[in-house]
Image (cartoon, rainbow, N blue to C red; front, side, top):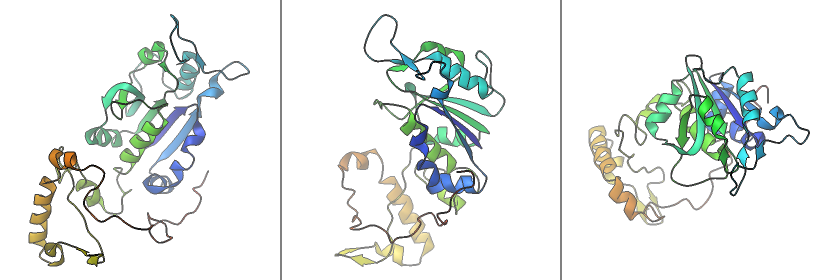
Length: 260
């Protein structure tokens, strides 16, 4: 998969692209991320990408010229459909709230082109000129689209074939095939079996895989909206009282990715 990101803050993505499943996907050749600095497409010496809105009002708008020029370079023509397999994504509060099904759809694309807004919003000609799929994280406002883009990329890339070490992991995630589109994952425990007076459910120590699967199904059903409403920052599970050992969490050495 190729992902093109258009932003005025390209450095925001520097560390994000070097860690986790995104880094694994890039190192394996399954993901190619290309970042375009919109300021590079401004024509004045100040590299201006914003201006005041016609009619007055607060804030500034992202100007059309840098965006149109950047899209031209990426091969997307205004008023035309993109090549098959290419999905243009516009990060904005007016967009559809992103869900797991959207991430699954995105993971099947050959190329994502993500425009990260800033300021008060976009000049409407940017919105009208391309067949964007508008995407929002939720009913709240961020200062820009970069954080939303990272969430989208993180959720999409882990679904690419061969990125996760265990393919079943994605199937058993919340909202996945195992739980169903509205379902949530069951609770989890790991070693030690006892810690500060808190233990692991006996069924999980029994070795009876049928009983364990039945328990997990039942527990998953208990993690629904009512459970969410009852949780006010404390899940009821013992929290870690320290960081994990000094090791790479995704199992891949911390080498530089070629080209970085």
